[in-house]
Every structure is written in C-alpha cells, then in structure tokens.
Image (cartoon, rainbow, N blue to C red; front, top):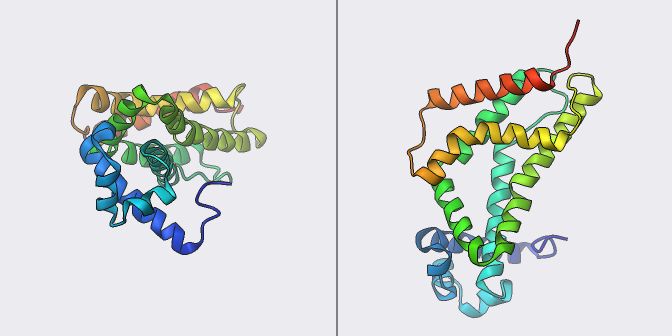
Length: 209
C-alpha cells in the first residue's frame, strides 16, 4: 500500500502541505542545499511534525519525486483504449506529454533529481520507476489494446513504448536539459510530434490491403 494510502484525510492534507513546502526548497536550493529546518519553515510545520511524516531528507525527496512523476504521467498521458484514431490519439498524447516535459520548471526539477541521484542512486531509481517506466507501462497497455483489435503489430510492446517516448523527448528535452537551451517554439514541437508519430505508425501500424 502506498505510504499515503493509509493516512486519514487530515494527515493526507498535512503530508501534501509538507511536500509543497519541500518542493519550493528543493527547487530553490537543490538537494544538497536544502535542510529539514528550511523545509519545515517553508511548509509551516515544526521539525518534530516533519519527522513524523518523513524520517529523513532522502525519504522526503523520494516522496516528492514520486508525487511529481505521477502528476506528470496523469496530465501528459491520457489514453483511451477505445479510440480508433491511432494517429490522432498518438499525436494528442505526444503533444500533451511534451507540453509538460518542456516546461522550464520541470527541466530544472530534472537537474535536481540527477544531482541527488549521483549521491543516492535509490532516488534515481524512484524517479525511473514512478516516471518513465510507469509511462512506458501505460503506453504498453494502450498498445496491447490495439494489438488485440488488429490495429497494431508489435513484437515487444515495452520496447515500442520506450521508442515512442524517446522519439518525442529527445529533440526537445535533451537540448534543454543538458544544453541549457530555451524551450523550443510550438512549430518545432509540432514538427517533432508529427515525425515521431509518422515513424511509429510506419513501423507498427497493421497494414491493410
């Protein structure tokens, strides 16, 4: 059961309050620069209350990573298995996913996660499991639904899901994340989305006679 699932509503509210304050501190100061005292002050709680919910800074950051990744997936990957318009569905999903991933605040957050993962690899694993791997699983399930209906032909749906995600992310996110470049224009995003969807369907759409 997830850590927050067993909490009462008031406790969930307090936990959310702590995570909101922690997000501001981690974003402003990075993982190493953030302290539990700073986080308690930003969240408007005592250090004692903070430690009731999270035993240390690593656990708090891991919970924040998981929460942020879940929100990214829910807002960016909305797939309807009954949608028969493959091109339209993939285009809409790719566009929505990039809209979230290419936000400068999200890119800055990724840098914070990468920096923390160098010292605590388990934090990086939390990000992979709750973010990219979870997104790949959602895509895989959607692909399977359309394979069963004869619309797609894919031997390994997990690999295909990762391929699709990397096609849309690579040209947009990598220059921002590692090169410090500005968010690309809407025209550039649309170009990447269109070519990624075209490439995916050329490889995996079931050919009809």
